[in-house]
Image (tube, rainbow, N blue to C red):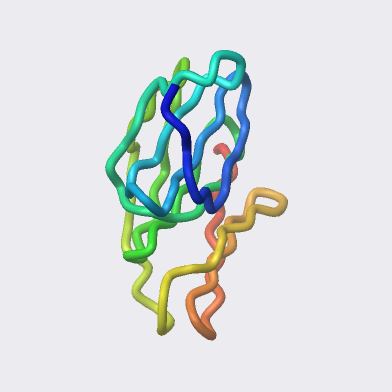
Length: 116
């Protein structure tokens, strides 16, 4: 079994854990019962949050991604670069009542992510 080291954030959805370590820039999917890594995406270190059967991932390069997962298999659905704000892209995404909040430096952005 391969260990996830120096994790930033891990979320559990269903039978899977999703997280990224700082040693390798891969987002990994791990079966929570067996501990087996089921998939990985090389998308950089970052922070993750889950809502409505989707994952939202914000990496240190400022890319915000929407990811799907099915039986632990990850797939990038869409992404865009956060261009407003300054300094490092270290803050964690927050979702409240269907609104995804992103802070970058002194700028706070809000995105409606509710299912239509």
